[in-house]
Length: 397
Image (cartoon, rainbow, N blue to C red; front, side, top):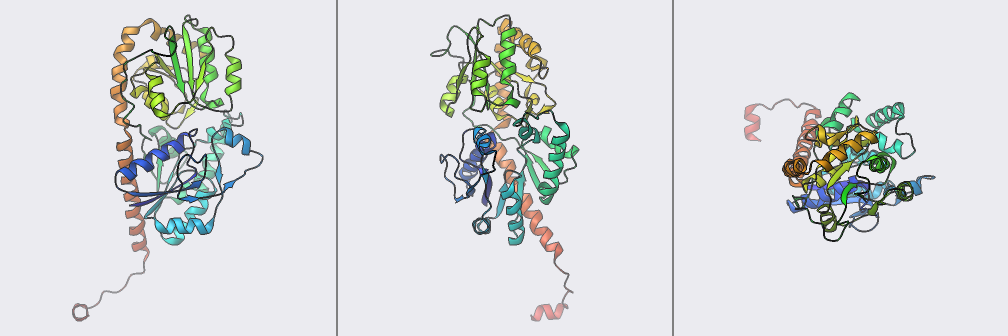
């Protein structure tokens, strides 16, 4: 297939959906498909085939950049050229380039699909409105009517998000397909060579932002019986870096903050004792699957707005959302039961194997094929019927 990905920002290392798109594009190419990308230039770290200008959404440009995001401007001429090339176009976000691009795809008679990677709560949390439920419901409905109801097939990264969309009245074929993890995230024997060799290391991977709740982890360590032994490792970038450093100043061992390319990330995870994912809202949290894929036992928030809780194999790996005291109790329990943790490390690594990137991409390609078949079947059914020719006339013709 000739596949076109349309995404506001593709070249960035600080946006989970963009990173997922990069991996899907690379794997689809590895499987023999021709894939092109239309996007803004981003940070320039990845090539873009059709470059859109960035739309400066004042007064929020600075905030968007802090969150690793940029909006694409619509360029009708460029979009028509890109979409005319492909067999199918896949839109990643519910913003202007998707709204305009879908119209162009329909005009050109090209099949198209959409992805649901952004929860309304991701947007509202950026403005400290994460608990404004009526606003989140309104955004679900606006996106449904303006964007998603126009697509026959919608990809979402988890069963949790699929159920959310169904409850909000979304009518498309909704395909729950994991974003998938690289084969490199496999069980890693625990080593402690160059990092906190005398400490119990607890890590979280994720953007430093309100909804990820690194502040909750800091408070839980403060309440832990073993606070003097614990070394926190926060892997990620984000707007709350300075706030979290200041918040954790009184811990016996101030957190280490860093952002690492994949080889170094895997090395760091091999030096971690326990993984905590405290986020209040997640459409999947691929970083959590990567961590458990290396054999880390997780402790995950049971938030009703997060899909990540599905990765907990039992109650020992769940804590009450927003409850630092309960998180502290779960951390202390795992510290006090090293044998149980050692047993669960292998169970989690084995469990994560079902979320391989290769399997996810194959499922996405099947969705593309179904969308293409439905698109052209619908076009044939919409053609006016023509009376059948007599047998003799058909033969002589």
